[in-house]
Figure: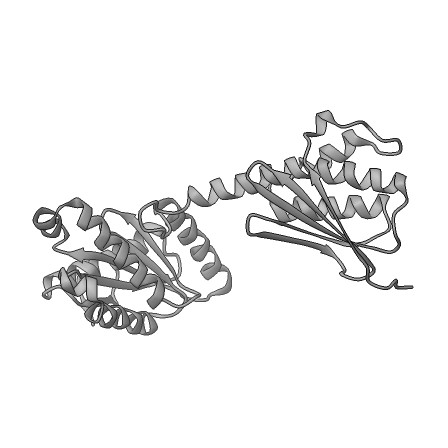
Length: 300
């Protein structure tokens, strides 16, 4: 049986859990333990929804906070919206109920609602800190740690599914000269603009990283032919980029395709060898490695 949609809104000031009375019928220790078991915000919220459903006539619940949107259950029935004031913003919680709540149920809802906030905030903070640890502060590309982690996953996936991928290594041509001529502040700006260009040029399935200084890598979900096409797109994008062209920011690239039993080091070494061949060929170009790691033969 479904009930007609109705809406109520209740502004509430958030209180810390240890300042709240303990309502009858709730095992708060067990509930708190369940909520603090997880560090993924979505899992914490799903646990909250499940607990709410055990104690209240709940169809579903949604929560919005600082750009995050969490959903559990269905959006039908009797609707209640609550807004909780926090020092750093506002939390909006929408409940979809099977029937209006009696006073004792409202007390349980408020108690459970306030219990979930701290573990949810902790999980969100942990997620944000984890993401910050994986991205380069200057360019917002993945950093060396994220690159190494992603490459390990790609190698394992490729071995497991026999699905090939390619690695592109890049660095900026004559970047030291750019820093010497115009200063490190402009050099940083050039890195930022170059990173933005990479992000708009690669496909959604590809990943770009800054692994140090003016060194970049791209993981390409395709063979070397497709990776070569991407390299040419990057060269074309630089040629029409107003800022990069103004300061003559160019790049050389090397490409290598995954092979069975490749390691992180062997794949990178082949791509890096190809990069140096591109440098030797006059820079502002790319080379594709089609040989073993010990050979210097490459082709464009």
